[in-house]
Image (cartoon, rainbow, N blue to C red):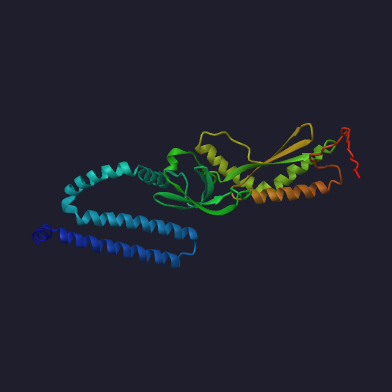
Length: 303
């Protein structure tokens, strides 16, 4: 009883009650704000940003309540937290680095929710950025092309300090892509080159126009050369066929569909040439086969 009376006399009991009430009010306020966002915000991006803002508000409000409740004993708290923090810092190095990574991601522009990135060798779309981990909707693996595999991957934020971060949709949300078309020797390669150029411009011309504006901003912002974003067609002749390469820019989430459109248009255009252009494929001709000497031994049945 004597210790309890001394503790209450020093004001710790009142501060504890004030702390509990303050934290309860913070939890109530953040809960109401989350419910309001879920009911009134139809856009998923707006709801996500609201949830993150409410969470940050809750952390800051809880910290403010803690400082206010123990404002008269900050010196003692500082010594206690310092002693405890030294041990925690050694035991939770990875956690601390992940928190530092979260701060770097939040303020450094590494990526944001909705970006397509590659973190720690894993490619996917960022669907959530937490204090310790970033959650990705995985792309690829056993699935061909830039399609979702269905797996959610959580990557520690400490990866931003240890490995490269590939962002497909940051300052320049376009990618250069290529497709190769083999053509038989003897075909009208001039005609083939012109129809490939026409198809590429028809399918990817809109991407090139937007990419040119964005690339001009990149040139002004970074020390980078002025690259060509318009579609180009080049060729090379090898032992088997004439190989054309079509290079073009495409929006980072439309690679597969754009390549599908290009191949459909190319096949239709080749069919309209009425044999002037023929696509090539790997063929093998059997010139001669070695002679086979087969000997069969017969045994007579003894009666």
